[in-house]
Length: 187
Image (cartoon, rainbow, N blue to C red; front, top):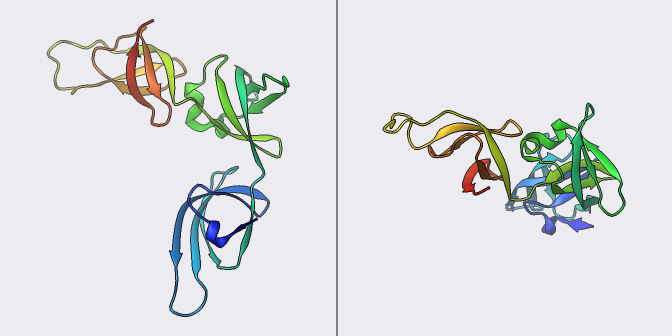
């Protein structure tokens, strides 16, 4: 059990039977009465964000979350299928659950799946992923009106800004946390 003094940004709690993560936190001590702990919380299943206040003395149950390393297998009409390499158990995650992370998933990639009561509610990708550029306009020497970058689309359908020397068919490394170009990969 957590108490109010344990509240901080990033803490995962069970609120109204669902896992929540604290995304913002503020502490106020009025002149009289109990201290007030104001939390901005995000429901880890629905994604909704709301504010909630607590008083000192309140207690909280930790969210029963489990993280498992799983391998991406394929995509079907239900969603994305991941398999636990040890137990061979398979889990389906919808595109809605994955959010923008679905752009960076490659066949046989190992990711960390966050589970709540055996149900997948999110993933953690490797920090960097290497993808092939599938579409990129050629850069014309002396074309400075466009600046120092141009748009490129990589396998999976994600579009990002890349330096002008990156061409179609090349492998590039992308930071999955920001969705930004990192470096060109020799391949």
